[in-house]
Image: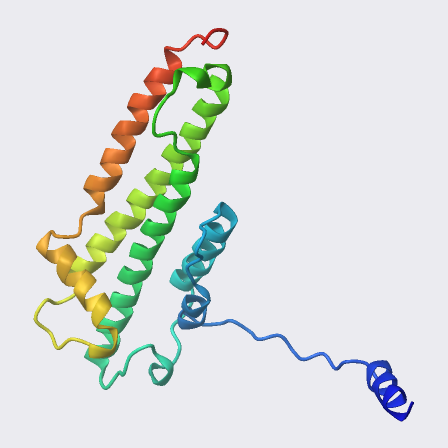
Length: 198
């Protein structure tokens, strides 16, 4: 009985609310970005929001950066690499989101839903075009980062992305152009269908 009274007393006292954690800096938004095992559109859009906010936000003090920063040159390099890397992740996310609306093949039995499929293709095309904008920005950012300056070892993966872009090994332009060309082909197939027969 005594235990029950203690439990009831604790529950009745109420729970103290804690203040919310304020997100102010680019690194904080970046830490909210995470990959889901199953990429539902809402999850993808949540990550897009975090990364787009990271691009708009100020950077934290270099003491709280995601890499060890020792001088002004490293600080400038870190910020450029961060912007490039975030844009590349946005390209990935927009391609993932676009694939949810894309129709890879125009099957004859989808003719009754021709208009819905065309609207879905329009959405996919818009999303792919946004990915293309982020790719061009990332490629430009990578081009401006000095190739032979001392590299930041804590974020070597970002340095590798920069190197692959500068060497031409990483080229989303070709991938996105392929998606847009295929999408246009599928669109033409849907447009040639008669919605009343299949």
